[in-house]
Image (tube, rainbow, N blue to C red; front, side, top):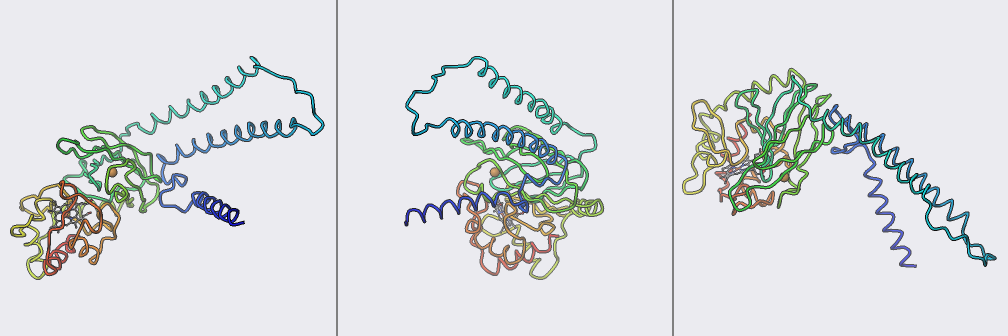
Length: 353
Ligand SMILES: [Cu+2]
């Protein structure tokens, strides 16, 4: 009795989980394409899926039919006819699947090349995979460097030129994989190599994705967000990103700007982060570029909402918010900031629109 109940509970839970996967309203559903580079493979998938369903129903149907029709009856005492091999049938059921697969291969191979083809009007964006966040650079548009949110224009193909951060020996860096399921396919990022991926968004919106190649401790916290903007918004975004940050002159924010460059005997923020200012020395590019931090809505691998409270929590103890390995040079360390220092730094960060 108990066993039966446990079993039906397990079955119900498993079925429930399976059914959940059918819901279309998922942020990372490849079954809900929002642009041609996601739609074309999806359409091909649908055709292949229904062919597979037809094969499944036919084969399973024949097995069930044979098993039921030719089952042993109580009064059967003679052995059925013993059959060993049937050349005609075997050729047939090798040939038919081979033809089906060959038929599917033709549009599939063609699509692989179509999806990878370079288009003339594409916007090039460089993607660099770090542990554990994505960096974006816009070589067609001056020295824009940003992180976490891949901002793209609507209706225009975007060509990503991607690589992964190279670190020193012994590991040389790790692979990542870039994937925004509603906008396009999945592609690896490899240290020391450039791979490419095309995306296109039909409509403005925010599209969720994530690193799809296991890359260590915070792999699960390495999300990617594509933000597609209408033409006007895109131009405004470019203009804002191209302009340098303005350093506040007075108040708490000015103190924060001071601290950003100098934390006494502790490692300063500029030894890892750049904030581009008019005539200022550039900071290092170990961590995300913060020049226009507040133009983004999410931070730290696009897993937290970018607001005052979360920034405060982040500066107080980054590895407590997102597992990282600062002791091996990966991620942001706890710098032992005082609450006053945190307040000033956050006030400064909030001015970086
Ligand atoms: Cu990764």
